[in-house]
Length: 594
Image (cartoon, rainbow, N blue to C red):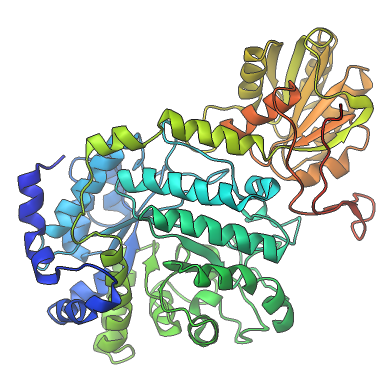
């Protein structure tokens, strides 16, 4: 980590030239002066937010050097900054950026130092996707909270604000100043393959309140929140990572449903909004994705909704934005549509040079670039990056994963677990009559930085609560032999806990055969709560909304009677035999009677 003397030397020129304090708009004159001294190449670079492999800005492992050379044509983050002068860098677990909080802090400091040492060097806006729940890039020992749909089941705006405040404090301590959260999509399609439990729910007003609360928490902690995915990704049956979804909502329905949380985010002062790679014919009938749509981004978002903050694309490597145009056209069209930050293009060299060429050829004006750069620099100023671009190990130790933060995450999780079925008051389980438990079921790859697999986490938690629990992971698609093994193991148990994950035919067979043993069966939906409709014979069913440790531990406490089930469905569950009819409505949830 750089010394204070090095820090002061690196930042003195920029900080002195800006002396930014108070509102960012009050400093526009100074920011415009700064922009006027930038070369065209520096301006182009400022628009990009790019991935880079490695745990260190200057000395990554050789495998990460090789990956950087292959994908970016540089060896390190520092080399990428020197060549392209990027304004932002995004952290990913798979890019080996997030090993542990102290390492992340060192990486962030190395990135800032590399950028500030350049001629006319500017601080870098470091970002990540830390939604909590099933999408997290920074894992334990950082504090991990329940995901959005679980928070929706808890229904408390106070909890959403607390999540944002604590998570924001921890992100800021490790040098991450922009978080691509919260998800503002209203999930009205149970078959949505990409949003689902990442959404707070299906009711626009409830989602809007929780979005605004989380934004206030993050931004109060000094981290830019990002509402996504505009104009609304909640009613798709296609994953925009792999295809090109089409939203068939009318303009009137969009106003009543999809737009509501984004309006709330803007009213709350949201720092950035992320675009969606979706077609929305009622808003723009050109066939272009919203990311490349001038009518949607400039006409509606800027014009009608009055938003003047930073607009960032979803990843430009996703198929939804690459279907219609080549990788050289996408960044240019995005800027023409009204975007400010170009996130993670497949080839930085192609994208960077395409924007440079578009300006030199007159397709884009330098003034258009200046508009976006001004918004980006305003944000950097508001976040304090010009005065304090660096973080300290002491700050990491004092802030990240503290006992108080972890306890708050557990308290919030306890308010989210939803009891959907409880025949003959099977739950809570009695340790005297149901001491020996078998914990079977799905074991998807654990979300970043949590312990996993879920069967093991549940078994450990239940054992700590006084049961004798044995884990038997059976997978998301158990074979006949695996089902038979679980059925045999159930014979020696007093009760069976089984996790379902976006239930498949094989999982359904497993659960039905476990029920047929006559042993009491408690099913836990560890992702989508819709699973319950497929298993009418299960005597007890809980929705946990995710398979992260914090949510599974909360479910275990509910099963053991150490906590009451207080969650209420934030989405409706339709009948399996007649999806037009609702089996469990929004707001449904059982309690433990006396």
